[in-house]
Image 1 (tube, one colour):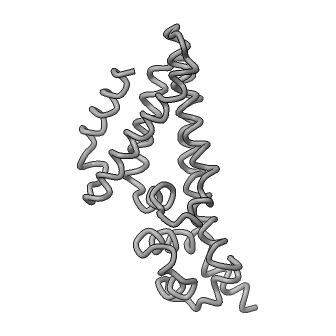
Image 2 (tube, rainbow, N blue to C red; image 1 turned 45 degrees about the vertical axis):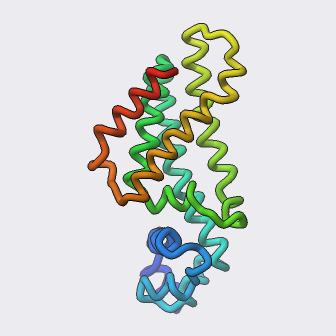
Length: 195
């Protein structure tokens, strides 16, 4: 009976949203199941109905956030499959927009400093990077570029790090996407022209 009442009032999405905010603001080590429950106004026992431990909750947050980003990028690939330049431009633009509109998500996905926690997101980070690499490869093949393999070794990484640096800088200075939207568009345009 008690479990059913808890399930009706408190669901995984609510827990994930509050946990994400707590992890991003306070850091993984400073957050406990009790502090997450307190932030929601529940007892910490109610969280254990949904998650066995903090690490499981953290991984659920990471997976959910990457699922959203990867889904958006795959949609762009489907919509712009015929034009490599547009595809890469749209993917980079969406990445910047996602990072700045979902700062708590981005911090957990890409900015964690704890080596033990970074392993929770390595697979998903690699998937994001692989999608960038595929878009770059498509563009280079369309252009008939020579030595595509060599360029694929460095170019996607350079583009990704440029975007990551832009997002990180804006997060550091508490700038939202709407405040830097024109600068973000100009940055993506510059990157596309430089390829």
